[in-house]
Length: 100
Image (tube, rainbow, N blue to C red; front, side, top):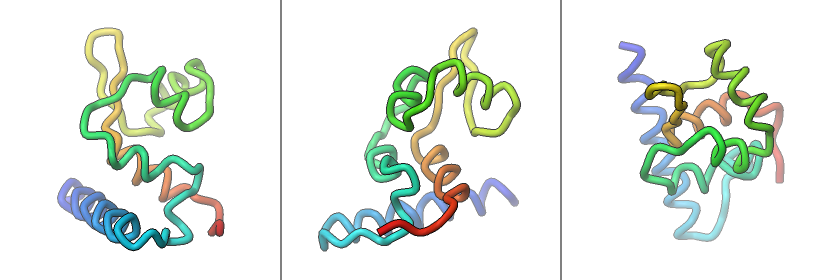
């Protein structure tokens, strides 16, 4: 049940951003850290190093957040991989306020 809700939220967010890109008018709350749209345009899983660069935190801090189970991720061997759409939704849910 929770997975289908999560998938619907990701799909709605992608549709909202696609519409905004076509009209060149961005919804106020789609840029909590200025990177949600770029994450949603990425179609492949991304590494911890790339994600930490995108969202502006250190690799060590990202690994700590993942180890605490606070961010959606996949462990493949010793590596972490992140689904950009899941991370974008995770960031959006944690936005502290609306930004112009």
